[in-house]
Image 1 (cartoon, protein in one colour):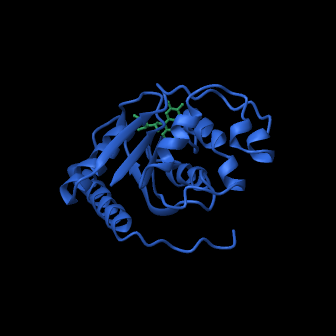
Image 2 (cartoon, protein in one colour):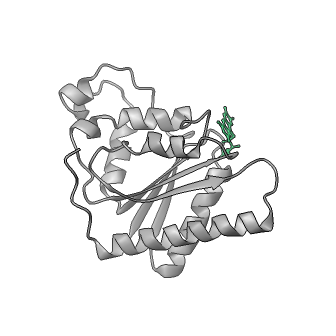
Image 3 (tube, rainbow, N blue to C red):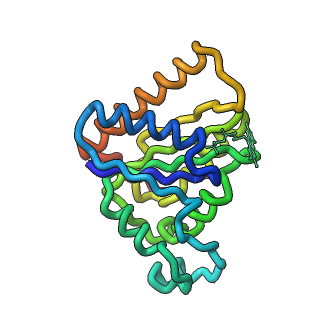
Length: 192
Ligand SMILES: Cc1cc2nc3c(=O)[nH]c(=O)nc-3n(C[C@H](O)[C@H](O)[C@H](O)COP(=O)(O)O)c2cc1C
């Protein structure tokens, strides 16, 4: 099983990546898997210029030369994709937004049907649902969204009780993600 975790925090290894590490740890307890991190802050994924060619003509007509093709190939060769973004003013980080825009064509030219998706939003406590919401259409109707995790990660320590509760939620979601990929079935995409 192959998992690709796309980390949208400009801090790289911040709170969001620590939550993803918890998912990785739990999944690795359940079985063998390759787990790869794609830190958007280090990726050569330039800003979308809005020419619309990827949508009107096709992805290969994008005039930007960077790692988008490689990333697309990586996603195509993976079983599960995790999108992780900090909540920035009730939305995703700019890095995640650019990632979403660079793959916007997949909303109109659906692909990645064999992949399953986990969405993770972390913030000081506000705007996590909105952040998840902003990631839901990343690949259109292609992959099935299996899990959505909201995780409060303020700059101060959480009480033990609150931390344990959130970690249990992460563990459950990770197990669900693993089992869903393992059994291979997916929901039939709706009319949307
Ligand atoms: C520009 C900016 C905007 C933010 N906006 C919010 C917000 O709307 N709500 C909130 O609860 N936290 C907000 N935060 C706090 C981050 O979401 C929080 O610190 C998060 O844990 C950072 O995750 P990271 O370490 O993975 O980057 C903001 C932080 C920054 C830098």
